[in-house]
Length: 331
Image 1: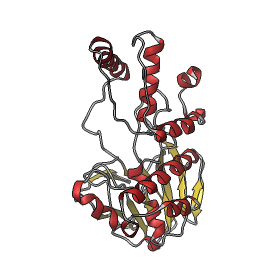
Image 2 (image 1 turned 180 degrees about the vertical axis):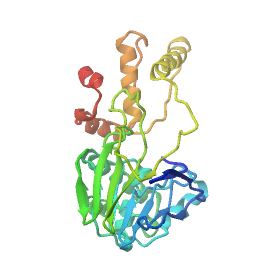
Image 3 (image 1 turned 135 degrees about the vertical axis):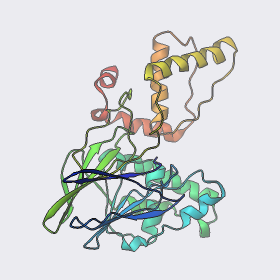
Image 4 (image 1 turned 180 degrees about the horizontal axis):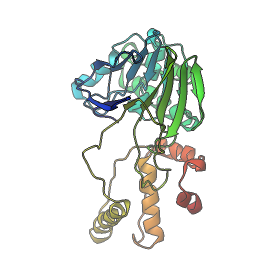
């Protein structure tokens, strides 16, 4: 999720802070500054809203790098129209780099491939595993919700897309092409989420660009906190909760206990909690389990009414290397 992006350009005399004023869906800003590298960053989603993440970096040699290719969601009657066109030609993209497996960041990849993108899609290994689940499910929804002639993509498109994935582990410098080097650092948002750190060489000079992706919380109960990323000349940073303070995890868990006890034990009711299948569901189940083990919930039953959540949980459990020490000990 991302709202308004901020670009930070490091100069010899300090920092230049530029607030980007994108429109509801798409915007473009030219980040050229002589004698610096000419670079254009165009925003085709996640601009003053929180879905459809797509950010296009074009270098002076014509190479075009797409950061994320997400599905617009929850935009009412405009949603369909916003997902039908990219604002750029898929065939013109040279490389795609994916920050994580949430649909608003990866959900239009099969459409990108369907319309002509033939290059590679770079992500972390856990992100690929989750994308197998998420993209297949999204394709089934496309089929069930739309006639064949108007679906954004189908299951065959999703399968073909997955064949173009290339995984790169965290903290490994990976050369995508001459003058383009990639480094993933842990963003702590969901399993496999990463900040995309690019080192670009042009005109004998080196420039560093960081795309934060979605940033996790430092007090996550399951995953490692966001990892510091290398110094950057340009930073593209999400700001979904930039003007808010989160409750401490302990306070949130106490509040969860209050709601469950009052509703289920005192009033004999039921608590229905809508939650994202990847990330939020696992955090909720973990908190409820801890409360139950501590004898704070009484004898209540917890149902996870989501096959995707169950499958995602199995994938998450298989990556203990991404957990905090407390969670590894707990398991």
